[in-house]
Image 1 (cartoon, rainbow, N blue to C red):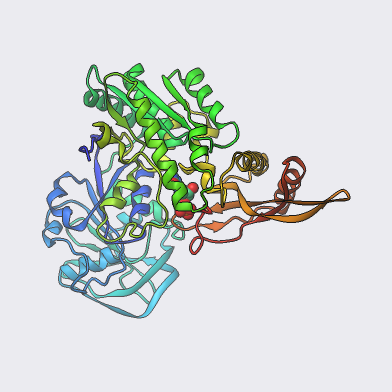
Image 2 (image 1 turned 135 degrees about the vertical axis):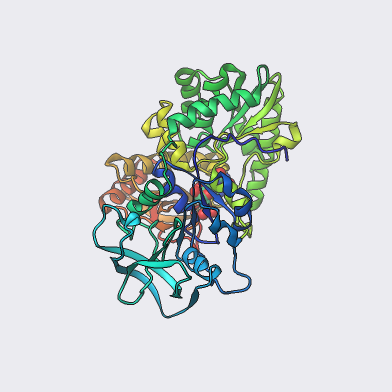
Amino acid sequence: MSESTAVKVDHQRFFVVDFGSQYAQLIARRVRELGCFAEIVMPHDLAARIDDATGVIFSGSPWSAYDDEAPKIEAEVYDHGVPILGICYGMQLTTHLLGGEVDHAVAREYGPARIEVIGDDTRLFEGLEGELDVWMSHGDRVEALPEGFMAIARTPSAPYAAVRHTSKPIYGVQFHPEVTHTPRGTAMLKNFLFGVCGATGDWTMRSFIEEACEKIRAQVGETDHVICGLSGGVDSTVAAILIHKAIGDRLTCIFVDNGLLRKGEAEEVQTRFRDDYHIPLIFADSKDQFLDALEGVIDPEEKRKRIGHIFVDVFKHHAQEVENAHWLAQGTLYPDVIESQSAFGGKSATIKTHHNVGGLPEELGFELLEPFRDLFKDEVRKIGRELGVSEHFVERQPFPGPGLGVRIAGEVTRENVAVLQEADAIIREEIEREGDHKGLWQYFGVLAPVKTVGVMGDERTYENVIAVRAVESIDAMTADWADLPRRVLARLSNRIINEVRGVNRVVYDISTKPPSTIEWE
Ligand code: XMP
């Protein structure tokens, strides 16, 4: 794989040390929302990098600090002078490493609690009430503080709900300020960042855009060309606009129409890029190639493989048309980077083969240009808005690479694609009509490979079933089916059955992930 060419930014940096917590990314996002650049760092990397940090936050962990195999850090970081905030395990580890005592709590504390702020150093609780609701989630607790530490908040059952060092800028909280169940948690994090660490809040999307453009120009040089594969989604579109802003028409986008797009999508991409953004676009109409290759294929993995292979072939063919192209731009996001580096988690089993352009850089000898390697999705959306992308587009739902191919259970035929495109367009239209899509992660139609009996007028019908899938999710790792209003379901069902030829039944998918997945294939 060609060496990563992340666009780095020169800002204050705050490290979130990930001890394997489900909340490490959430902490980093909270810090970024407060205008401070947060980076997730593995425990074993902290000591070597600590000079770069303006402040450090230790995450929670499923481990116990006193376990031999538990992730640890080198105790010298406590003498460095950089402010540290330990959250839950982060506080217990600090206690354990500095000579205090951590043990199993007699009763696990999980859920809401109310802390009372005590002591004279109120910097963490500056401007807040003397009693605060917080969210606890721990099985261990601090039994005795190390020398030099004192309690700054307590609950009736936890004498050390929050602690600090008397002379060093080291703080610890037993509860989770990063979750929304701690209503004043963001204010506490803000107090730590700005009050204790001296943050300046210098992480803004506007400054990111300026610096990213400079860095893209420096990376790509004066003459090289860049190719960007468009998926039609937010990340690759915003990446293309940003790169175009940096190097102008030395960027060429390639969009592959695989015949599995949503209704109107192919035309929309062309209009947007050619007429609105004026970015050079190669539009590869490869519908027949994909649909022919899918004839008779039922197995979901086989479908994904065929779609993936043809995509690579088509993309390669068109990429070779672009002279002097040495760079391939991708909309890789920070969570993808963290997931591949995480020592304590990340994806292990391949549930579904995701279709992307992963193999292309080596095959074509491209360097990778990944301007969003350091960003979360909501930051890419903000950049999109700054760059003038419409709100409707910026907020659009994710769409899988293999498109409707994984939403037609069973064989993909031209007829099935046409039926699903119509039904899916109605589903989207009706859910969006009164804003019911807000808060949904995805909402779409699926064509089930069964026919059922119906009656229209005096006629018996024997036609397709459309399933409506609408889910709420934070990161697609887990998802819950959405409780859509009855009037919306009634309207879309009525419209689909009346307007889409070949459908006589609409069902609503009420499965959570896990154990189901969001897509049907
Ligand atoms: P599942 O179905 O695994 O999907 O619960 C999780 C999220 O990933 C999206 N998805 C894909 N995205 N290429 C993509 O770019 C793919 O092959 C692919 N398969 C699933 C899915 O839409 C959901 O948001």
